[in-house]
Image (cartoon, rainbow, N blue to C red; front, side, top):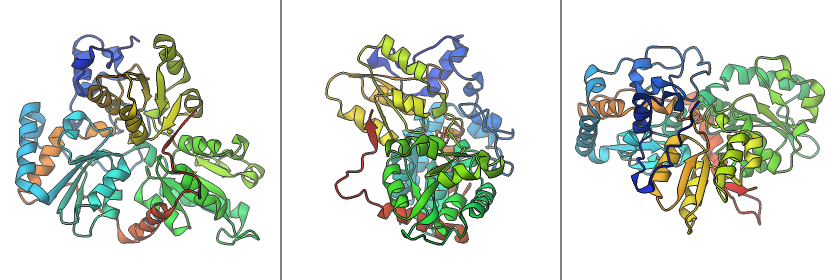
Length: 450
Ligand code: SF4
């Protein structure tokens, strides 16, 4: 497979659009430099098919019952990019303050350029809160993000996901029925899950990453648990260890392992819970000794990064600064110079005062945008194969134009609503996170140097 490093072109020519890069690779005969040539097609091609569509998680199993996008009207599929761009601008102008458009860091450039706010999932959900008078919040991200925005926004505000098929394969790996079953099996080992021991600690505190369904956040809220982000995972685990003997962490095993390891928890005390095996694949002794039980979930984007890629970057770019996201596997995080959230990565690049070469281990749309925004630096994605998050890829400007023009016509399409019996405990879990503070003397750092 030939590698094409899309950022390594004259720096003043870097195009922030990964879609342009993919189109040119496919039409220019370098198709093996992308993970699939299907990326060059419109995502509506896949709206009626099984799976997450082309991109990094295309091999993951999509749960039955996941939302499917009904067909996008033909006029939006046929429109050329410049026409869609104009229509989105015009619709936004007509709607004015009635709508807020949110764009995730990993979203394609052609969508992000229309966003009122660009950020990670939690930053965007809180941005939505800052506009209580907006009638609609159009969330250009994935399903769990729109759910979180619905939890934090007003009851009269409509949160809209432009393509209902934009799920998240990692969030889907923690299914509520499997989590309930896990809890029951753990109760057989630990006894009464609500009973505190002599130290005032309950047997298990459930902790869920923001990248999980509202149903999982609700489960966590009902069982004394809490939500975390990749920026505050350490503070949240400290909060949990003040209340429980151990933590059940889902859905991302890598964020859980990397964070707990940095806190000094031995790997031997971090058994994995595979929901398809009895006792998650561990035995009762291992679970009795556990400090952090890791759910068997992962992000297919961040799982693509490897130590071999870091070694290659260092060999080809002496002095390169390697920063990876904590959703990467532990050996990759250990081999990098630094690990941190998307916000940490962005701020680290912004703070570099001297021209620097950065090799970044996170989603390619963000890396390419950072490369275009900071031409004084050389910034490239550690993964030489262009393979974006397949679920973010499902949001195309055609869907954004459709949702906005529908609003102009007085119609709300693709509204995401979390039912009240789930929303109430899920909000409690989010509020616990907001209230959690690092112990006195330790400043919250959303990343760390190795
Ligand atoms: S990058 Fe990974 S965790 Fe984020 S939305 Fe895509 S699949 Fe989910």
